[in-house]
Length: 320
Image (cartoon, rainbow, N blue to C red):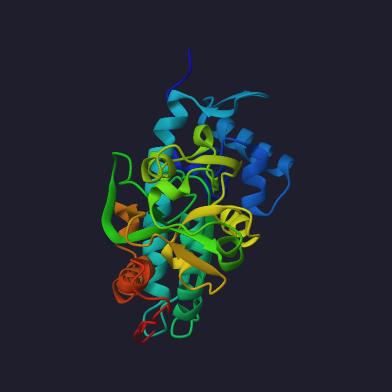
């Protein structure tokens, strides 16, 4: 039977707790090592040292499952996670007194929105907040807020149940696009019936990370797809080759003059993005600043995101 965690603070090396957190979040010593900028053996040694200091096993370790928290490890995670947030808040309050707002913010997002909208917007954000460093993770899968893969997440669905703050960021539209060359080589498309026999670039159904991405069959019943990808950006570039049609977000397709909307009043899909973060992080000034800016950027680009405009707008970021 495991011993209960002995919270004798004199026995703890606080630096070991940082290593513990990263291993708990990544479930891999190698993953934690990459995030911390050290080698695998250092991480393993630090975890063993923490377990020895507490007199208990914090992880069940296996080659297949990685580092899985034990019941005692789960208990410790709650304490250490709260400590990390408290330290971050205290550091921010002290370091930013009388100085420009600073710190680090990691933003996770869906791939297309992250690359085509958030990347240029957040680059402009740093014009007035140069001391806030930004990590942008535009990925074709969900990011975990609980594992601190990101501080702020932009997702297609509301966040999982838990201690999160979220708001609807914006609606956006997707339309059917093709190159002018593609349309010139095929019979005119005057109605949805004319789409029979055309091929589409689309998602791989069983690998799509959200049901919200499986819109092709609903928008174009019976659509045939012989080129598929988990990446909307890959679909975008496939469409640019003039070999297939693709349903793409307007914030991608409308600003590219090489693409032409097909049946723009008939083939229209509307989806939403949600902005979320953990409750404890939402109180940090740097998180609030980025959060408010993203909401302003989305609101200022309502027409662009809904396909009623083809030029991205820039918003004022305020004073640092």
